[in-house]
Length: 264
Image 1 (tube, helix red, strand yellow):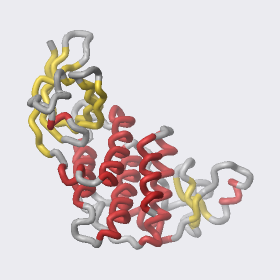
Image 2 (image 1 turned 60 degrees about the horizontal axis):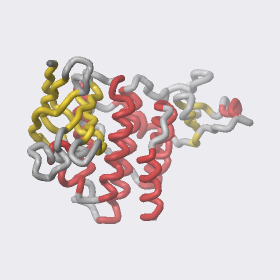
Image 3 (image 1 turned 120 degrees about the vertical axis):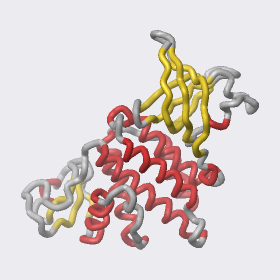
Image 4 (image 1 turned 45 degrees about the vertical axis):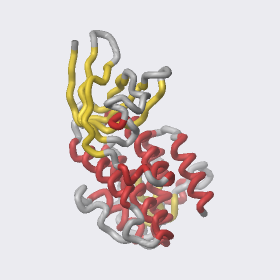
């Protein structure tokens, strides 16, 4: 019988039958873990609360040779309750969980990134508390933008923003090629003529914002102000860049887009 104990974040759950759930965790020590929660669909079960999506808990898992892990015990560290009170916040968080589930095995042992994820969820829950209601969408978009760019960096694909991808010059970097991984100068952008995936136009301010996000330490990475004028373009770049690197279609992202469109 193998037993592991770890702090872990619940990424998603899936009902197996009337009583049990299949739970996917993200652990800094083990990456992605999947375990059966016996009887946890019941609200009366002792582990019911700890095995909800976005919940951060101390979990003990056991496994017989060749079998799936089973949840033996849990202790909630943070349920991120504030996040669950708003369907839009939940939609952003669900997208983050899908991305992490996709890349978790690439980042085993990265305690700093794990802490960054927890901080992202915390700030998602707090979004709008100190700003007028109309600003909550911008605040959530900013968090998403930071999450996407930092996640790409943790995957080992930090974008090149100081020099043109083709000629190496550091002047006139007016485009960003998400699929190729960085900035393109005005002299070299013609290489994309006739191609399906074109670079995105960027300003020097866009480049500076991206640079701040990818180079700041995890404690200060969220501490910057950005106007909607630049937020929307950098958001578009961050999303396209991460998706191009993971090469994955996320249904949760499609749903998030629909929600944002409905909000207007």
